[in-house]
Amino acid sequence: MLHGPAHSASPAMAAAAAGGGLQPLVVTLNCLEDPSLEQDALSGAAAVEHAPLSALSAGRVEAAAAVLLPSLAFLPRAAQRRLRPWQLLLCLGSPDRAADTAAAAELGLRLVHVDANRADEVADTVMALFLGLLRRTHLLSRHASSSSPTAGWLGSVQPLCRGMRRCRGLVLGIVGVNAAARCLATRSLAFRMSVLYFDPLYEVTGKVKRPSIVFPSAARRMDTLNDLLAASDLVSLHCALTNDTTHILNAERLQHIKPGKTCFTCFLLFSVLAPPFFSIFMFML
Image (cartoon, rainbow, N blue to C red):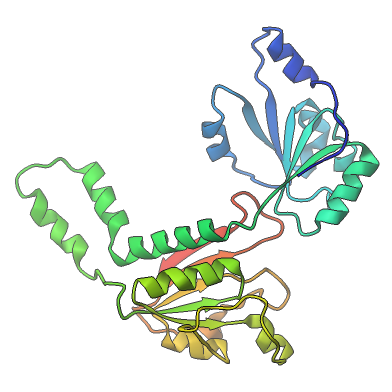
């Protein structure tokens, strides 16, 4: 959603339109310290750079045609003053849209909020990661791309297939209750897996209330995180990063998992990191 007045093109865009050959500059401010993916995607169309808050005096923010940032309202005032009315500001995964919109109106800036609530996309990605680990497709793909199909090649693949597991009969534990977690539960049940889920807010408050997100009836709610970890073959985290969920999987919690069997895919929905609006951390124990 676009907030703020319309303005004429930036100096960088005007120079490019006049045939000066100058590519518009896209700056990532207070996020995306390594914008290599964005650089590849926009190669030939725009230059992408990261501008740390410690180097505002370099003038890269003022020179940008577009600025990516996690939140305008929570940006230091010194950084806010560097932004220009003709720039397009993309606010990624803002924790307070109303505050950002108000700040944009006060400063006369154009602000676009990028939706972070992509439940189906998150669930699809989790399933892809789980399937890749269970079926060893990442190892097979790496082997296929680094080897030539010579005599004996098929035999060299067999060791990589050891430890493959089918989804049917496995137990998925979901930590956190949101739309993406519900979509993941639905997909996992279709793969004939059992689904357990745990709401960290329930453990913190100790209150029983009607959930706003209703899981499929075949999924079972667990009263404690330790019980979920002990029963799960796969675990996926979908909880917001708060004081209560920081270090939710600490050393004591990890003592309750199934050694050598559990596959974790953690989607921690950070309000200060973007894109792709969630952080992916995956490992097998």
